[in-house]
Image (cartoon, rainbow, N blue to C red; front, side, top):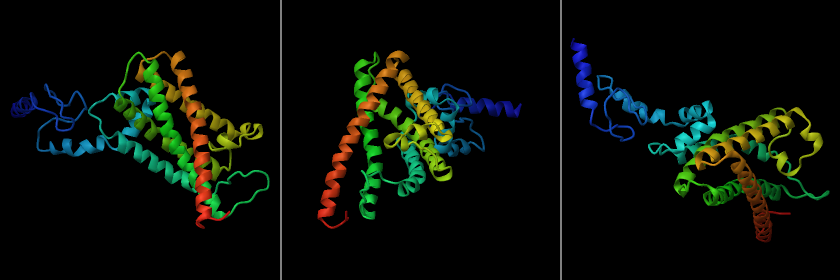
Length: 276
């Protein structure tokens, strides 16, 4: 009887208040209907508040996305109580860098014919190649937002799409970085970077070449899927729009970084910072 009375008192206190995690109104019950926070008031009630940051932490959110990548990414993007999307993206990029930096530093920079460049210039080229990845990502984001907002029946806001993009970037970046590291450093095979500038039929028809192609197709399906759900568009319309947008952003990013690299090298060589 005492326990039941205590439980009833707990419900009375919770009803009509606000969730300490997300701030949403509470209508009763042991858990918040918006974010799932534990609302039970007891001698261990502080654990609910203490566990709130854990539920929103990168590992927990990442594991949640792994269960159903497309559905959970869009659901989390539409969850107005989730505000850690920027930190989620930055954490994913940091993990990507941990894997990709050793790969980049040992990567052979292609040069025309038998032209040889100095170590300092080669390092500059490697750094610019990674800068180009982020520049291309930014161009893809801006171009995709403009294209999909133009053709989609649902006119999503810039902030809403930015949240979706951060979540998708934080989810895919660690996968790409870890895969590239394992394939190129452990198996010395055909990684994602090879598909960008020196893919041949011989490299493609290898176990790592086939697995890399499968990963790229899976990533393409993931991005098409989240855009289809987020913009409420049929797949036959979403797929070509995203493919064309990605291709166009790659072309723009390539030529933009080529000119940036050309003039950066010219200025640094003239200043004596790097040598040919």
